[in-house]
Amino acid sequence: MIPFPPLTTPLTDQEITARASKIKLIVFDVDGVLTDGSLYLTDDGQETKAFFALDGHGIKMLKRSGVEIAIITGRHSQLMHHRVKNLNIEHLYQGVEDKLDAFVELTKRLGYSTEQVASMGDDVVDLPMMRRSGLSLTVPGALESVKQYAHYVTRLPGGKGAAREVSELIMRAQGTLDTQLAPYLK
Image 1 (cartoon, rainbow, N blue to C red):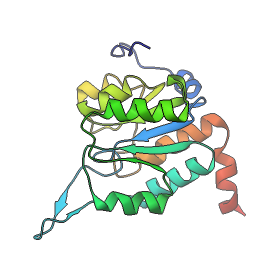
Image 2: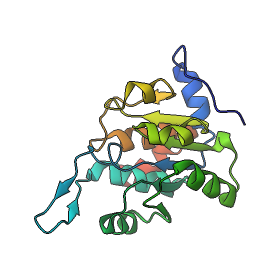
Image 3: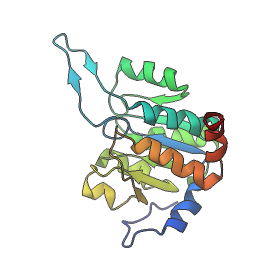
């Protein structure tokens, strides 16, 4: 498939919902998407990041609803192993220089078509996978050059609810959100 060009007009809510209803796999970037993009380094060189609990629970609900979750990130961090274990995410690609290679390998291995995959990034290194996704997503703090390729820009910032917003958007489009919320509304 030929990657789509920059969007000249925003998609309608109905068009976004139609795309979201087909998603079987979502690929997240980390820095700036699952975190606010800040990198904290300790005196001994350890890297730490802050994750938002509401994002994590949204991802867990999305996974329980039948959508597979993957993370493709350019950085390598032991911290991410702990985070994906906590969220029960099976597909983690770290230290990836060419995100498109990892994206293509993953989607082929899992057998998903372009229309069944969403990707969420915020920087130019994320564009190759975003441009080949049925639903491309980004955050308000993303570069303008990235926003012009996104089907949907979240209202909430990266690391502060953007992943939860996207998770609920997909579940709502697929009719699974109420089922995921039901246990909490007893």
